[in-house]
Image (cartoon, rainbow, N blue to C red; front, side, top):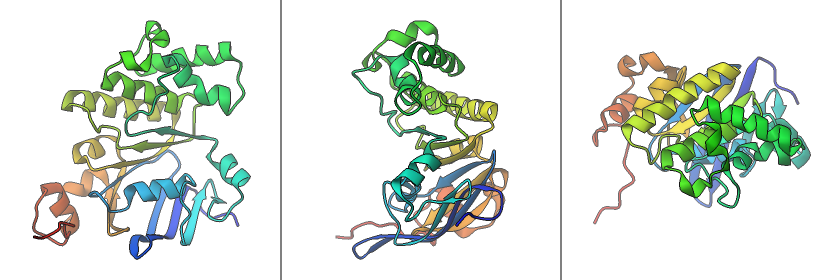
Length: 260
């Protein structure tokens, strides 16, 4: 059943468990058209599981997930594929194909999913590489020739190659030094603004989150404990947020540490 309202992505009471481990416990998040939402939280809080549920890689036991009003939970694979076709994804470690040159990595979705002729796809790939600060000479390089920062840029170019309406970012600054992390944050912000895309980012990097987000959501034990404008997070007064921002061991967030 289509969802009412104008949310581009909507998760309603999503629950996902693995045996006795309850990872998502009634997760609720809405992302409006053109909005950038960053979901933050420590390791094991459910960020990656949430993203895999949206992408159809995992099936929740309960709840609803909508993209453009289309219910994905329990939908036929063809329905899920159609709903996700207009999305892009920047993976945590870029996930480039070593056997393909840079331009074919960028154009992969255009050729494989959209059936575009290779010459036209290559032209678009070079345009997208330019948007992320890489010149045409880079198009024929192997991903193995590139630095980690350049690989991230190529991954971003691939994510925006089809001009998607929705883009997912999985820990976009992981493995980068602070300067290159700032470069990637700026590219993400500029490229998504250029497209007018709705974006969902999962991260543990507070500085990065505040740069690219309109709204930030903190999840803990599989549920949202605070969500609000990015510019309010430093003075929101939420004890979970305050502990996470400070990186303090003391507070309502219990660390999953094995005691001797």
